[in-house]
Each structure stands twice: as C-alpha cells, then as structure tokens.
Amino acid sequence: ASTGCNLETGCYHLVGSNYFCGPYVISHTYWVDAGQPGEDPDNPVDFEVCLKNPQCAEAAVEGYMKKWAQDCDHDGQISCNDFARIHKAGPFGCNGTWVLTTDFWSTFKQCYPD
Ligand SMILES: *[C@@H]1O[C@H](CO)[C@@H](O)[C@H](O)[C@H]1NC(C)=O
Image 1 (cartoon, rainbow, N blue to C red):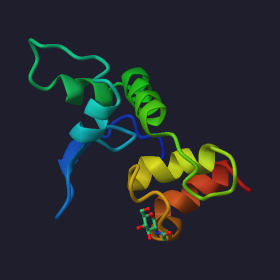
Image 2: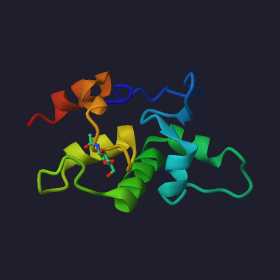
Image 3: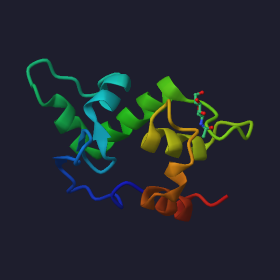
C-alpha cells in the first residue's frame, strides 16, 4: 500500500516530515523500534540497506508490529486493519481517522477488504 511494492524505492525526505526508505516507506525511528534488523555496526547506513531489501524490510515491519500491536480501531481484535493503521500513523496516532482518508488506506483496502 505504501509504494505498490516498488522495490526500486530508495530513501527520501518528505517535506516537513521524516526520512523514509524502501518499498514499505519506513523511517529510522521505526527501524529502531523494530529491533534494528540487519544492524551492522560497521555501516552507518545499515538501516537504509535493510529497508531497501524486501526481506529485511519485512522483518522491520514484523518487529515494529510485535512492539506496538494494539486494537487501534477498538473492534475487539488486533487485525491487519490495526497493523495498517500502526504502519501508517504510528502507535500513538493509530486510532485517528485521517489514516482512513489516505491513498495508503484505499490501496490497503483493495487487498484487505472488510
Ligand atoms: C486517540 O487516542 C488518544 C490517546 O488515548 C486520544 O487522546 C485521542 O482523543 C484519540 N483519538 C481518537 C480520534 O479517538
């Protein structure tokens, strides 16, 4: 939902926002919360290398969800709806409604209808 699984997605700054990398559009903070998969003390851009690699980026998503899993939409279960909200809005804003109006959410819903 972030890039259409575009494996060519590099790293870039979003205006007024963070620095994001890879097909899942993940920030350094997210990667740290995920447990820093692919960490390499000898490589200052180890997070960039990880997040551009689909398997490592997926490990980051899994680590992040393990840390922050919660019932964002208060429907009584923690489902992919919650994971998509957490991915896009983070753990503290995932209950908000703005996520539901993003292109990210529309694309996600095509893959994961209610
Ligand atoms: C989301 O949760 C926060 C923190 O609990 C709360 O302050 C906020 O009002 C909630 N927002 C919505 C849209 O429910």
